[in-house]
Length: 325
Image (cartoon, rainbow, N blue to C red; front, side, top):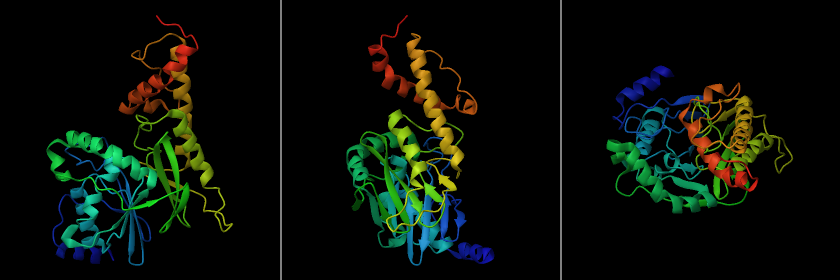
């Protein structure tokens, strides 16, 4: 089978962009790992995980990618090397690297019929407000690679689901929040222990990205993820025990990652409150996190999270009468 795939790829028309390291997770299930770091010209913004499932002639993709050019590159390689043609695309949350590839699944490689584009109604609404700003920011980050975006890349999903939970093809989904009005949707592949939790979990050597999150809201969502796997379905059956989580960035993880995220959230809130009560300033050096969070302390996101939570909790510290130097 491997030889056949290699020969097929050798005789196929060349695809745009570099070869993509698609990985087989299970029969009919593939994962495209995001590249490490923040979007830049070198990685073309392809820093977020994408997940694909094939059943019969249908192929579902979670995460549209960062640009139309990157979407078409993935489309080409899926078709020529794997024989997979994406039929449905889901945007899990209003984030540039997950959403700005949608146009590439409409105006597709070699004229392939457009895929159906999906999102939760609240995600779609947030995209309508936020995408112009996200596009401008991503263009700046991409620099010379901003040509990947084209002139007008913003496309809104044509099909919007509503409610707290439901089914989408082979997935069961549930809406959570990073902050008030900022929805994210987790997807559990039916009958497996595989769950994608974009916008809630990170596993790339650093803490979760909380720059636009509210700490308590995000913590409640991560806690609810653990409970979700134990919920009874409408027909009374139980879901498979969740064994593997696909985060926003980084490889698949087990339940220990969620426990680590919750530990970090508790420590961060307590540490900020303690520093504010002691009269420290936001610009003072933050305390080092305890084991097993020490490795996260020097990560770039750690400082940004500290600033975000400090500013969110500062009114609380003033009302409690904390001293100031």
